[in-house]
Image (cartoon, one colour):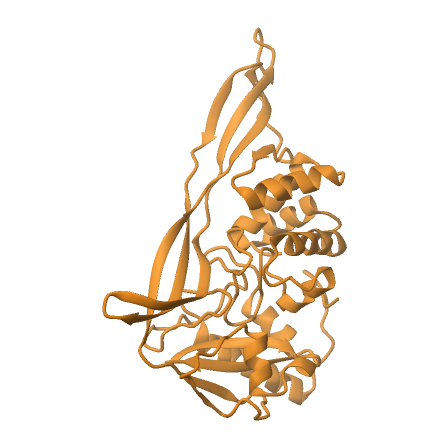
Length: 336
């Protein structure tokens, strides 16, 4: 299973061809990075002014998952390739294994891009592709429409000896996050004929409501604050989180592990199993890079949050030694 880049490592010297490849990826990323990122088949309009650098390989705009440099180096791996796809002038980069992306048809399948019967594709589906290839799709009578939906915040309860036993205090008020969804919509008059979601990204990560729960003596409460190592107990919000919470507890993990997992995933994908980064191909709950590495946990990795969450746990354990350790790294580096 391909692994994410390590947080601290010395890179061996790269040859001229590798450096040229990295430069190409950085250039592509620079053209594609905008304030509005991501989802399963994400595109951004050519008339949107690009930002100067890519700061995120997650589906969250303000909480980065992987740096542009990291993505460029990973993309220079001998087993990985990328191809640019444009639909009605809007672009994304499809990242995948070289062996699985040799033709235009392969690229569209890897990027989960579904063609309509009347779509005009250039070059043809059987055409061979390279990293210089730009696949163009013209879709008639389709408009790009964007809407925002709320992401629920969680309630986190933290014990502290600084409050008398039984007393509670709100330390941080909760704030809902925002998930931006972009769809390609066809209409006949006022009637929607078809609507295909190709982007769903965390525009704003939710902020947990933190409640301090007193454990100190009612006669002489301690003045010390709660330990920063105490992650508290997070109340799951929604079906996906409830399943993940119970799965962890059933498999010997702690409440702190769920709190850590919830924080990371809320910032990476907002718990959306179809969240995708347009410049790297990072995909799913934990933003696997590329998403296909989750196939080792199930053939349904593109849509099944259970499969994705199991991969996420494995990645945290193999890469950091545990979910809480991955959380600590995320807090320190704003990525993992």
